[in-house]
Length: 171
Length: 277
Image (cartoon, rainbow over all chains, first blue to last red; front, top):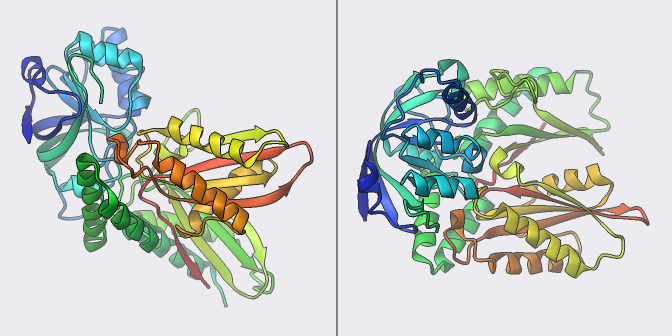
């Protein structure tokens, strides 16, 4: 199985083909609905972002609260489609990969191709299984959003399927 | 004697149980599907889903991070003689369970202005009356990825079973890979718009393999199941023969001018738990 370590360059990601099952490693950030709205608003108003998107992968997730002694709570992906309207702006700002579940809009497919990014789907509903693939987690932005805050995750052998590759091909 | 504390404690433990222990019928359906699946990627995913519910049960962790909007069916015995505010007690139980079980709080105060309520209340409570002295509580934590795919169709009264089947299949196709297939499909037919939607949701609390109340509806549900699995959506949309875990239909008499049809989806994490006081 191919592996990818984040942050990753477009060049490395361009080797991936839609439909491939891969294992992800390295450091990624999380963000879902409200974070996308706020980041896209800030980009539009040319304000400074509270997180660095360059070369980053964003994982669409809102984990359950951490039990004592746990690294992170259950943390499977949420539906990617709801992020579609904000995604092209984030890709333009340097984001190189997204991890979620389900299909994306035509606009997102076009933007993925344009910015040579990749969209991965991981295992929806497998929150307990996927938390085992997270080796560290800390909140780095938007703590006021509770489960929707931005976390920095370190991941190891995190399974994902290449859903849209950098040429705009989909599964 | 049923007290407010009884109700709250029961709801609290039902919230935790439903979210951490997958229903036995859902476990069986996942294992059966995994054994029959030929597509390698689909099989990899089904195996991960089986491992997922095992980890969740062992560690008492939520099976899915979306621990849902909490739907509670309260079936109240007419002779139970309850002199307490059941709604208040149920909500106290939800708040207690979501805190104690480290479940995610996903409810916002206002649908437009948002703002998390911090304890996953209020629950959506459906009250009904049954004979006897007991109180039956069923908790259905409903993830919203699948809830967002809900559909209501106001069909013509002359619609045939074939049209009903095609309409449900179109809803499954539209849900596609987004809402964590393999799906359990709840179908409500008849009543008014609201009743059909209610029945579609209630159908999810019936076991996989219930299909329907009569042989006519059982065979319609089986037909939808067979054709739904032939859509080749597969687990999470990677294709394969496992698109549905089951189909349950509930019905109610309706008006001469209409045929309401509602579809409610559950992801593969089909959760609910019941207790009787």
